[in-house]
Length: 316
Image (tube, rainbow, N blue to C red; front, side, top):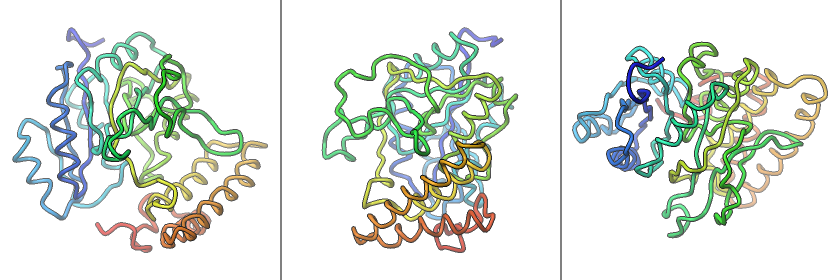
């Protein structure tokens, strides 16, 4: 039981050579109404001096530096461990290319505190104006669901918000772009799995939570904006395609069984091949080939950062 009027929240975000995005996110966090927080910035192997610049610009932010790129999983795990050791009750994972609204955190914490079954939850996430040609009403995440043929997807993605997704509800997984985790659940379930490096790690954590009797939840009264571009069809980045592909198979090998695993093994590759050919057709051939590398490297048993440096997808 927390000893403060409101639970203390550790807000963890990662910087990797991204001063502008991270600075915008931190500036938006300065405006929030929920005050019992510690903001924890992980400088995840940056080589452009952005970590030092951010430390000078935001001296009240706790900064932890890793000399190497630990990925979304390893970087966030550093922050989670610090937050819990520092006495935070819960931990919010937040992408550094998001911009929060002043009241975004209050409804997340209220929802989490209202139901002990909830281990993880996210709010309603829009694209930023810069990602949608000046529009601010296009949804990126409004809850999630399990596709019948493979994987997961977001409700509302790329739709204009017309109020269809304004009801709180249980979902398949909370989005790692804004994911409030219950502190006691983290201690019970463990950290993010380093097998993933990035992508699918939140699905894995939420599935582990579900196996332990918890649920994931969507709270639409919490609103943030996400400057997301790396997975747009035809503009997908090679690292996005590689990890989405490889990690999907890792997830299935851990969590799928029987007919579900067979269905995944048959149908997931069909989607991946389609996406690969689409990228090649759009002259984004490196991203297209990265999808196929992901299949091959899963079969080689690669996990975490294995394969990423070999393929030239990360440098540090």
